[in-house]
Structure formats: structure tokens, C-alpha cells
Image (cartoon, rainbow, N blue to C red; front, side):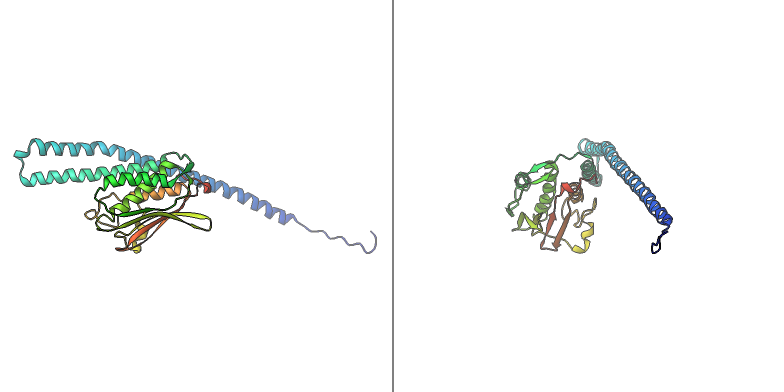
Length: 272
């Protein structure tokens, strides 16, 4: 070798081994994540199918209970004591309530199972259709209703209509006992994100219990005060999540509630 020339040899065997180990671990982790995701999807689908089947099968015996109670009341009234008639009427009332709960559970299950058809939707058109229906349902409701500009969005028209149906029905219901009330439907735009909202000045609720708001069969008001199954907002949340959005609420007791939601189907549709 010529004088002044130096050779340096590095043993990179260990580094190569480390890199190979990391690559192998990444493959293993990716497989684990994919398998776990598949298991969760299967479990969710089985749970939805179970809920649907149970709810569907419960309706037949429930109709029988209601039907036989009605027959006893109508055809054997003279042979029944006042207490017996009262108990049978209570049976019918509770059968009807249970029927509504089952229908709500079926609807909740269907919301997670049905396909999504994306198209450009005009929310204002959906809102005005829903409002027309609700005015027939609440003919004595005197709320002042304002509908702001609602920009078109990419969504499923039927699902988005269901969102407005449930939110506005709540707004009508929880302002129904006021002699004067206001309901506002509009949107804001923050950092290029459109945020839709439905606002009312009804009974509101305590924000300490907000974590229960979107749970299935969760109610923040007693059934004797306001009718309902406690599943409408759970359906709304499921729809919004399926459309890649988020939903949240701000409220104050006796000062109403505002429900905000976003829609981002490009973020990836879900089967939640």
C-alpha cells in the first residue's frame, strides 16, 4: 500500500440486524392492528345484528300483551273492578312505551347498518321540510323560528334529514311549555370548517350531565315532564360520526341548548 493512505472498516452487521428487526416488528404490528380492526368490525356487526333481531322478535309478544289487555277492557268491562281496569290500562300504557323503545332501538340499529349515498345536499331544503312536518305535529307551538343561510354539503340526504328531524323535534319539545320561545337554525365558519347548529331557548340542561347526552336510552328530563325514548340524540351522533363529523352541545338550565355539528365525509365514512 502507498504511504499516507488509510483504510477504515466499519462492522455494520449489528445495524443491519437492528434494521431488519424493526422492519419485522412493523410488519407484525401492522398485522396485529389489521386483525384487531377486523375483530372489532365483526363484533360491532354481530352486536348490531343481535340488537336488531332481539328488537324485532320482542314486538310480537308485546303486541299480544297490548291486544289481550284491550280485549279484557272492552269485552269484560262489566266484570272488572275499577282497580282491575286501572291495572289493565297501565299494562297497555307500558306496552306502548316499551313498543316505542323497541322501535327506537331498531332505528338505532338500522342507522348503523344502512348504506350511505353521498351527494351534494341543500340543508336548508331539508330543514324547511322538517319544520313543515313539525308544525303539523305541534299545531299550538308558537315559537319564532329563524333559518339562516345553510351552505350545501356533501352528505347522505336521508341521514342528514334525520339529524335535523331529531334535533328540531327536541327543540320543539323542550320549548313547548313556554308562551314565547325562539328556535334558530344556522351555521358558522371557523378555519374553513362549516359548523351547523340548532339553537333553542327552552328548558336546557345541566352541563354536568352532558356526557350522558348521546347515550342510548339516556334522558336528562323525566318522562312525566317530556315524552321520548332517550334514543334520538344517540341516533344523531351515530349518523354524524358515520359522515365523518363531530357533534357537541352547549346548554344552561332554563336558558336552552345549542347543538353544533360538522360533516366531513372525505375524512372517511364509518360503520359506527
